Image (cartoon, rainbow, N blue to C red; front, side, top):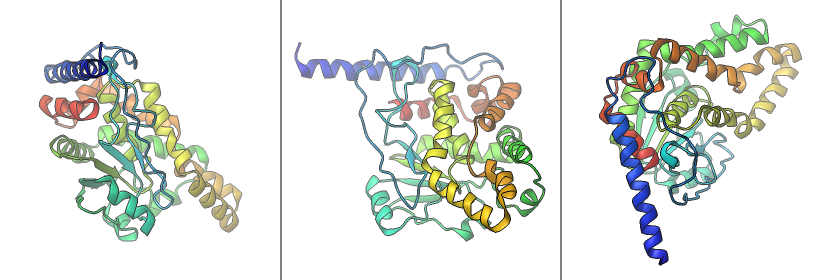
Length: 305
């Protein structure tokens, strides 16, 4: 068999699997709470060879990365993989000239800013060339509130705040409305898209976890991806803690440390709330965020097509 025929067969197999996944999502809009929209393996075997695209590391936007991960994309349902170069996640786009040039070269079509007015005023984005700028402010996840910070007395209290933030992504109707509007725009917008908040770990982390879960990326991989913020932003986190320890003492630094990174329990709290209220990620997207089955299917096609 010629190489050309083999590659064509692989592309056909990928297309067929993508159509099957999209159809599975399209026709499960009426699934009852607690029922999975489909029951599929999440391995990487069987469908072609992934395209390997390594996302550049940026010094001034340290938590910029591809939603698909590295090494050709995370394994998804039907033996497919999340496709690189479709969605990017980030912290605030306060880029220097060198990093701005890199972001310009990516060809990003839309930037979605999840920050509040105050956060944006403190650190406005430097929008990549040609990208639309769209706001979907989410109050939960904004750690600049002095009332929150002043109330903390222990690291455990700080962890509880972070867990509550993730629960609010499920329980707060205004947050769900903003997420629903943004996911609808994700599905309708062509080209590479980028979403971000201030640190790129909480509001951005929840958005990324939903997109990965939507196409059957297994939960452990979703947690691993979530925790990568500690690696990508590690230098900034350590420098912030060192400055805090010097100015206010190591005990205060220890109290605030859980706010600067992410822990598995934070995302677990959100997923536990989601399963309690909606049963499955699919039902949360349809019932909680108000997405149509067609929108969910279109998103799946973007992510793994």
